[in-house]
Image 1 (cartoon, rainbow, N blue to C red):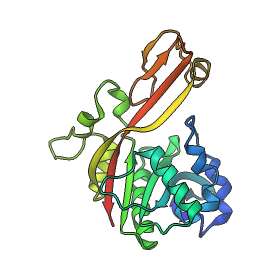
Image 2: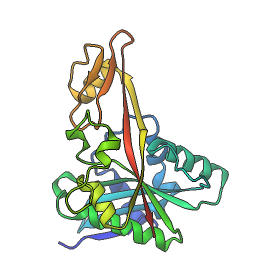
Image 3: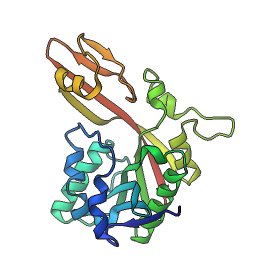
Image 4: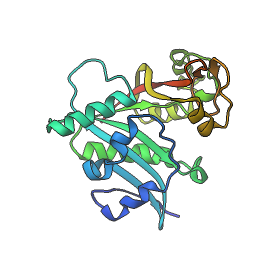
Length: 237
């Protein structure tokens, strides 16, 4: 079946379908963007439809930036964009903060199509640059390997070994740096038990399935904290 990729600016009737994806946002920053995204940035919300079924979505946000280094990752760019929006600042960069494909549609090329649509759509809005705090999708298989080493891991063809990083580089993106603290999720041990089904009963690192690095548990303080690294990729449009 053919897939239609469109923005909410063009199809506001599809806004409710953005919720038809599995969400695991336990950090304190994501709701600042995602709860109001369709209202504040409909032209930056893309949704892919296979007939009446939503199969992928992509969220991006415009922000103002003059520095040579990019903001401190996923959380920082969301906060920066929110502040810029509140103050009515003129924006010059767009950050893609999420590309999600329904689990039953993964491996079908939709992620490539969504990235291509993001690049084309962002250029069509008049922006020359798209930056992405990429979450490498196989880093969770190597939770103890530093992200700086993982991001430099390439195959015989010189492209990144990680499939999602490879998609970005093939599309014309350039890896520009590693963000050691892109997203932070803190919660009580009870919350982490509910989120993961793991005991979190001792102080020390806890390896959580799907997490890029271990979660640090402090049993004495009844808290566990996950600090996720990401990789900044720059697409010149």
